[in-house]
Structures are given as structure tokens and as C-alpha cells.
Amino acid sequence: MLPDYRVRQRDYLLQISRAITSRLEIDHVLRLILQSAVDMLNGQAGIVALIEPTGAYRIRQSYGVAKPILDELNPIVESARNAREATQLLERSLVSIASRAGVGFWQVVSLPLQAGDDFLGAIYIFRIGSGGFSANDRQILQSFADQAAVAVNNARLYQAVAQEKRRLDAILEFSGDGVAILDDAHVIGTFNRALSKMAGIPPQEAIGRRFEDVVRIVDQRAGSTLAEAEANGWPLIGASGPLFIEGDLARADGRRVSVEINFSPLFDREGRLVNIIANVRDITRFREADEMKSTFVSIVSHELKTPVALIKGYASTLRRQDAQWDAATVRESLQVIEEESDRLARLIDDLLDATRVQTGNFRLTPVEMDLDELVRNVTRKFQSQTKRHTLIADVPTDLPVVHADEARITQVLSNLISNAIKYSPEGGEIRVTSAVTPKEVIISVSDEGSGISAEDQKQLFTRFFRANNALTRKTQGAGLGLYLSKAIIEAHGGRIWVESDGRRGARFSFSLPRV
Image (cartoon, rainbow, N blue to C red; front, side):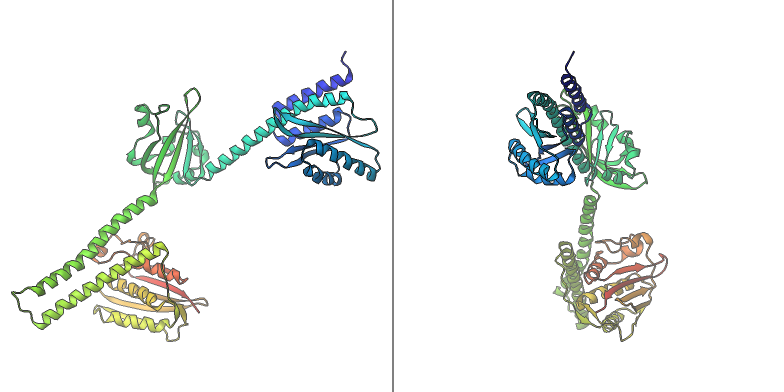
């Protein structure tokens, strides 16, 4: 029959073995180890100190130790250079603590937790009494500590793997690109937030379905689908580069998003295909940039070609040696040349300003100014250029002073009045009005033209945008005026907007902060 201590040793070792396989969360493991060790050696209390990843030696778990005593022991353990020194310091400290508490003589035994060549920490058991720990006690604790070290090491490895998994899950979930992880049958196992937003479908509705049924590519422009690639032998171990496809992703709500998808195979050690990683990137902005570049080239080419052709035509006519032109004809020809040169200069200035806005080099020279005088001067100038329209400057003479760049505000107001004239070719009234709030002054330009659709109103202030209608196609312009006006007003800390019912007339307004 086994002695009692042998039975206890066997029972506790079996208990720790179960902890190794069933409890991998390190705090649970440490608590179970410590409680078992204290009970096994008839102790009253104990602590476990571990080497942290930072190299610090700290108490990670305690049992039967009052908080005031634990607070006193913590700095002692942390100041030790190794487990032996920590034991010596603890023994001296416990004698002092026991003396103050009047509880007799404290003994302490320590046993290192060693996993192979790696020192993990130590178990410290405290016992009240005059008899020391026997050789049998130490033998039991040694066997126990060997098992405990395995449990602690496994728990640490599990904790590290769990932490790494959480980190990778967070990277995956909050990646700016869409990511889906598929099995070898293209069934979705992971569907991150960015891809959910792109496809317009919640992750829980996408997981478990085939990738092609959720991420539907239409208007394929480059690359190949998974099915096409697999029909040609993709993927091959060691020879399979990333597969890609470019096209439009048809969202669940009917809208489309331009995307590029890269597929990468993941093999196991036996060379079997385990997963396919799909990385989905929204390239809508890149495509818009390409389209904008094409639009820019087309518009600027057209806008440059017309004045250049007129200037060249009139200059060539005036140079003809076989004709004698009267003074009036020469003046008219030179006037056209001058006007078209001014038009070219304005276009070049607008292009330069647009570039400055894009690069952040847009500068203002603000001064205190009276808006009412500026409004009347600009309105008067444009009235002299049109006979079909009646321009009215309906602003009081006591508008509050604003702090603004006079040349830039003149540019904005001139652009709005010029547009009102161009887009109301039948004539009518163009009225410039004002409004004052406690924080800002508002200037509005209203016309009686054909109106602006709600869809076009959303894009009016973007670069190179021109509404696609018959009137716009007959009207000159590079689509930069309102874009620059918006940049100028916002640089002043103001707002600019448009109101129109889409059928008749429009009102453009901008605000400037009051001094």
C-alpha cells in the first residue's frame, strides 16, 4: 500500500497533467498549480513569479497572501536578479512580516520552473512553523514543478499563438483592402469589413457561399477568373504566381465598384491546396483619375485649339500682302486677337490655379474689404458685355466688412455671373443679392436659365465636370471655374452651394466669415 504522501503526490501530478491538456489560459494554469502546491506541502500561502517577455521578474499569481503583504513582496521579487536571490530576499522579508503580524516563524521553499534550457520562473511556498521542508517535501515539489513548468510553457505558447491570431485577425478585419479566405472549392470562410463595404453585403451573409456568387465581376477588363485559371492548370506548386482579374464588382444594391482582385494559393506540407487568399482593391479612384486625365486632355485641347485657330486666322488675314485693309477692319481683327489671347491667358491661369489647389500651394492675400462695392463693380462690368440680360446688384451699401482676397473674390463672382449669362442664352434677369447672419455674409447670383438637374448639382464643383446636355456642349468652358471657386471660398473659411429645381433658373451662393 502506498504511503499517504505518495498517494497525494500521484493525485496532484495527475491533476496538473489534466491542467496541461485542458486549461491553456495561463492565469488558470498558474492558479491551479499554486493551489495544488500549497495544499500538497501543507503550506499556508504561495506565489508564482515569472520572467516576463520584457525580461522583468514579477509575481504573476498568489494564493493565501493578503494584499498588503503582496504589495510589500512585489517590489522585493522585482528587485531580484534570479530565483535564488528572490528566495533569500523573500525569506528575510517574511521573517519581518511574521514578526510584525505575530504569527510565528515563516518558512519559504522555492523551486524553479524549467522548460528545457529555458528558465520560466519559480514557485514559492510559505509555511508557518519551526520545522523546515523535508527532503521528501522537496522531492514531491520537484516532480510537481517539472509538470508545472510544462503546463506554464504550454500556456505561454498558447497565449502567444492566441495573441498573434488576434493581431492577424485585427489586421485582416481593419485592412483598407478587401480580403476573403476561400477553401479549395471557392467557399468563403473569411470576409473582412472592407470587402463587405465594397460588395454591399454583410460578412455573415457572405460566409459559406461561393466567392463568385458574392463578388460578381462584370465588364472584365484584364486578367482571368478563378475558373478560367484553374482550367489552365492553376495553381502549380512552385510555379504559381498570383492570379488577378480587373473589372467592375456588381454590388448587391445594383451599383458598381471598379476593382482589381489578386488570388494567392496556400498549400500544406504535402502540396495540397488548402486555401485561396483573395485580395480585393478598390481602384475606382484610379479609373476616375484616368478618365479625368482623358477628359482634361480632350477639354484643354479643344479649349486651346479654338482661340489659337482664331488668332492665327486673323493674324494670317492681316498679313496678306494682296489686300489693303481699312482701319475699322484692322481694329476689329486686332480686338478679336486680343480677346482670344485674354481667353487663352485665363485658361492657363485656371489650369495653374487648379494645380496649386491639388498640390496645396494655393495662397491668399486677404484684406478688409467692402463686398457691396465689389458686387456693383463686377455687375456693372458684365452688364456692358450683354444686351439680352438685365443685371441687377441688389445689395445694401452697409454690408459688414469681410477679411478676404479681393482679386480672388472678384474671380469667384465674375465666374458665377459669367456662367449665369452663358447658361441663360435666351436672356432674362440676373440678380445679385446678399444676406447677413451673425457669423457670415452671403452673396447669391440668380438666373432664369434652364436649371440644373439634381444629379448634376452633386458634381458641379468637381474638376473638369460639365453637364452632359445640348446647351453645355454649345458653350465654351474647361470645367474649372466652379472647382476653383469652391477652392477659393473654402480657403477663406466659407461655403459655396447651388439651388435649382432642375426646370428653370439656378441660384449660386457663397458665404464669407464676418470680421
